[in-house]
Length: 400
Image (cartoon, rainbow, N blue to C red; front, side, top):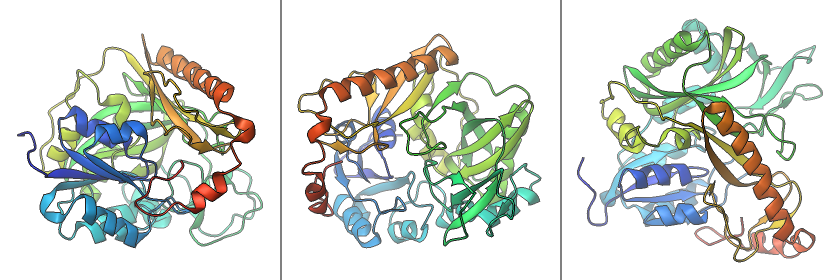
């Protein structure tokens, strides 16, 4: 694939786009993008980047998004639209962007199927895939049930079902016992290729909920006893939906049993863990898979790798001149304010194996949190924040 020239660039859109921007940069691809944060390192990785406010569902306002895309990546200059999280709640917003831009990913109707809990549960039944009992009405005995929001990402929306009534977008799912895992894989519309299995980190006390996404650890091998059937599930979903590009499935492992929770029909947060030598650039693999070409096999990194999300445990503001360690990513701008439970940054760690890397990541998560709390002026952080966010308008540089 030749290197990009002129003003042509890939358009990247996600709730948080840094991982996509890093993947494009590693592949040597020119990229512009839109997300809800415009972190320092994201902007450094791309030719141009815009921040748009996210609404309560984690989506962009449709008109703002179209105008931002037209400003950054006019159709004649767009090499392809690559999207991450944020379109599941309203897939039609993706359709508004792709009428005159090449779509490098799954079509909006695939997202709609994945985001509809009853349709997806029906698909799992048809494919004989283990999936929790799912319903729209509240269970009469809510113990052992969870309430979720259709199409939401990141786990923050998940709650115990007790005391919750049916509501627009809410559904109820029987809780599956075990350890959460995921699989990142490539698909060409017909066949799938695994990139790697991951074990998901438990949410720390600072997270906004027990099921909030807290990071992941790359596994050299599949969880014992379930690898072949999980890979078969990825293949079955690829065939049924015509999946293309990078995708991920989340599942629970309980001994040698497993339960499929959801399909993320887009590049997932674990892209970060696998886009590293000796693997080829996964951005190029994604593009090629969308065009119907899959690698025969992918190598495994020699060392263990893990990433952990850092959540604020008290009000804090990032001080000017704060020295971010090289193992931090998703770096907020100086002066950015964070309320308790908001994601501040991500830490990455390597180790001799997966367990060692995970221990390092958890340690680094606490280390950077303590450093920020020591210097982040928590007592005065709230003072001007409401006014700053009220002044935030589309296409502006707003406080985080």
